[in-house]
Length: 133
Image 1 (cartoon, rainbow, N blue to C red):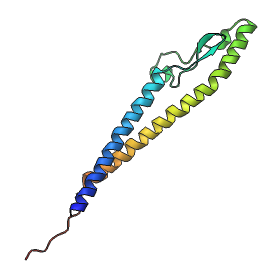
Image 2 (cartoon, rainbow, N blue to C red; image 1 turned 90 degrees about the vertical axis):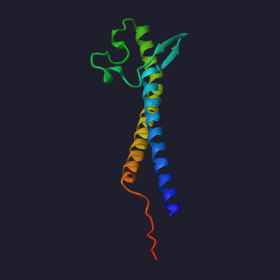
Image 3 (cartoon, one colour; image 1 turned 120 degrees about the horizontal axis):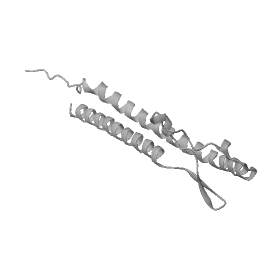
Image 4 (cartoon, rainbow, N blue to C red; image 1 turned 135 degrees about the vertical axis):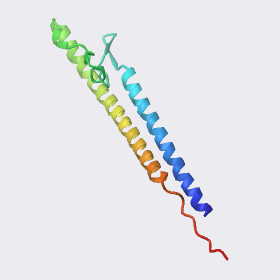
């Protein structure tokens, strides 16, 4: 009887930990993706790359992404724009992969923990009936 109570308590504890860790991971990944900017250095200057989570996806009316390189006028500026695009692409892809993987993992942790809590919510540990004499 006591073993069943301990197992029930342990399962509930792990479910709560999963929910809390999942929420923290979601907040961490989302906050990092929206507040951290990726940049590259070219010819001694720093240039911003695209955001991991585009502000235009979060708030309507917000301009999306970095300024277009189509407005660049001189051939040297066009070449610089191409080099910056090539330099930013792997950094952006890595940041997006890490961010979305972390968000997915956090969501799965919350879902698994919440499901375990809901399953255990209505069930009590099984108690053996003792015959009375």
